[in-house]
Image (cartoon, rainbow, N blue to C red; front, side):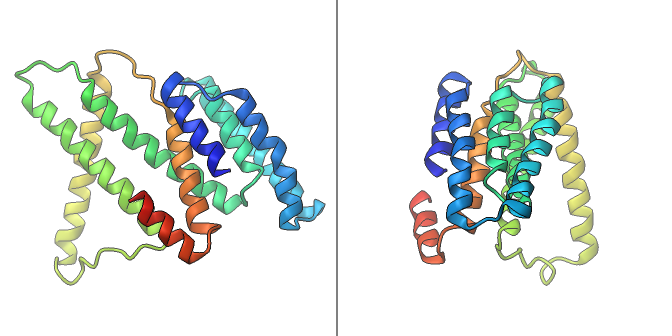
Length: 219
């Protein structure tokens, strides 16, 4: 699965395409994984197939509105045959975080603002930094990371106001980015899907020692 996800990311970066043969291979290999995992036909396998249908038809609506590519939909649907519903929703959420961060970074570099519009440009860059940092923090907390102990250093009221202000600045910057693009950017969301899937595989399926070694190697 990890090899397939890396392959999907590489092909999406190179050609903005995730091949059908790769998605089909992931889906067709799922029964072997069910057998190796000792899943029963009812209800375990039925749940996996039902989850795949929910993901496919739900994201097909997003595809119809131009929100993501067909290969991305097929890849997530194939992953749904492998992962339990909770982990699959985790992959989708992580994908949205990484994909959003990629869109913000690419959009900030593709601005059509004039040289004099420094305030808007600065707001776009600030929003991008906040989005990327916030996405990384949420992903860290989701998978067992220790939250920042800010309560003892910053009063609760100040912390709350700061969070609201950060959200407002991020939203305003996102609007600036979306409305001031030179051209439409093809974002390789296969990279985001692969990142979410690999993160879940690393944290949920690998033994703790191997996971720590793999994480240190990636870092």
